[in-house]
Length: 221
Image 1 (cartoon, rainbow, N blue to C red):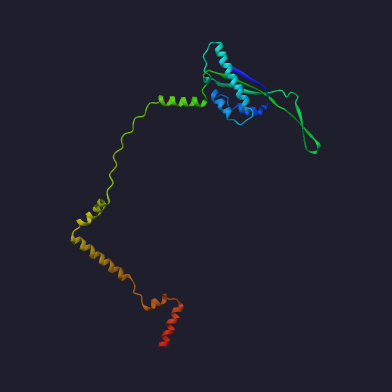
Image 2 (cartoon, one colour):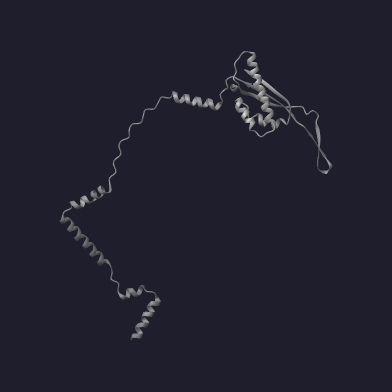
């Protein structure tokens, strides 16, 4: 069921009215009326009256043709705004330097068509359905095999036992030999160190300290 309602010679420019009419295009009747109710534009109320007229025309035609139509099933299929006549209403507006500007009073015509036919699906909905169909058509992937059990972490006590085990297995003779080898190595390192004589110590001192030491030795003599 389709029905059309028109509103002619509405005071206001077509450009401002199109801002409101574009908000209800393709929407359901109940949602469109709710949008117009809470829209803070001067053209919202006349457009709502035109939409209610289209709904009334649809129910009337359905009764004439003995067809049951639920007003909630209707949706706005077409709506547009045309430029109306100026009715030769011109006004003069004062301008700077003694000039005058001519301004016209604009009028527009509104046309709204509602229908109860099935609403065509949008491109977004079609893409969603195609993706869903692909997911259902694809064969299910086999479940992944159970992963092998991870090696249990060793506690600190077990790690200490593993380290101490080879030490405990060593014989007393082996430990004594290790101590003697260690002592010989320390003795060799001590021989390599040069003993620092007083002259060597004096060489490392600054020049002022050396002069002070020589002065003290002369005073003692």
